[in-house]
Length: 461
Ligand code: SF4
Image 1 (cartoon, rainbow, N blue to C red):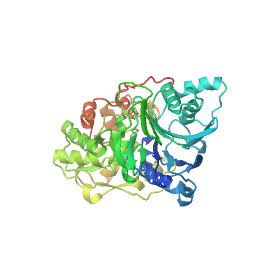
Image 2 (spheres, rainbow, N blue to C red; image 1 turned 45 degrees about the vertical axis):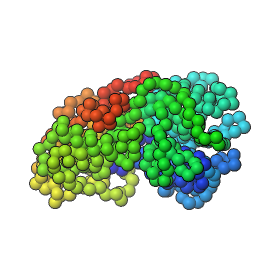
Image 3 (cartoon, rainbow, N blue to C red; image 1 turned 30 degrees about the horizontal axis):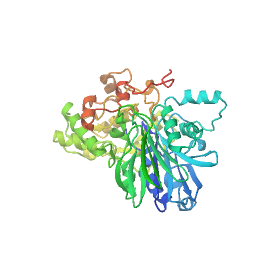
Image 4 (spheres, rainbow, N blue to C red; image 1 turned 180 degrees about the vertical axis):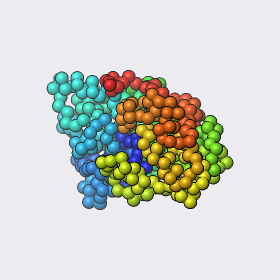
């Protein structure tokens, strides 16, 4: 399913934070570009210099919003940044991050990645008590709770108290006049890593952003942990303890960049092993293996190696296709997919092709890919999916749509095979998923409906 704007799943956001780093906003610009796959709808940077805050944000990818001129308006050695894809919230300027807030006579900036599942009930309570929210973003709620000073003047205690009240997924960065805070929810749904750069520090949603700016990885921020980076170094404390480590398995399967390492597990390594395990579970009677460029490349390598089959470039991606717009008819939508992805006729003609994809969400793209390969002369198309059937909506910051929009919801693998038109279709098992990660705990709710949190009113139908 994975190609720009044809993506059937969207990550909500990515965050970065810099403390004590010269030209912090220039570094944030580079780090945000490394996280661009986590959201292209908008981005922004907030910096602090000598107690004064500066902010620039806008709609569009990093290279369009944050040019040299804008970076020049963001002075200081500390900043936070954000890339955004909207999920439960509507798009629009008012929801772009970071946000700047005032708290008594001081200011702070905040940005977050994830989705707070009890946001609606906490907001309703606060609105009944007279507070007016200016955006639909969970960040404003988080900031309101921090700014309301539940624990007096102690910033660390106020952030812990706010985080403790909120349930769901959040990896959050907060910048005050002299401190950078980084905080993860108690389940640890979204990644957040800490690194050092010269005498300063960097936090980022993925380690690929640390690598891009030349930072040295120190460690992951723990589920439920708040770290504060200030003039006296790093302080660590915990706002909550759940005892669980529910990293989103889709981070490993699809969202994160293959060169990132999440909680000690290489994303490329995970994907390659998942491809090997998929081949062991469901070999394909094929002449060659191909991937959907480029998101399923790692899994296809593993599948091909394990099955002793050649890995071929059966499909190519056009990287220069302009943004997708809503096509008025099915035939134009089909052309939209063909503009982005084409079969290589000389490779697939007369061949039995095993196509490895990372997941099937709504299935329309998979169906078109199968047809494209057949039209190009493939004699058989065997779909192999390097994750279990995606049958349950995500409430933790991934835009999946409703249950009814998910092809696997209430359907058998055979129903799905018929819909996409493949000769055979098989998925990796949940056990295979755990084995590939080398972990005993993951969030797998979209595969088995076992949500790690209460869902509050989020699953109201
Ligand atoms: S439900 Fe799925 S996509 Fe959402 S956090 Fe869990 S594993 Fe990730």
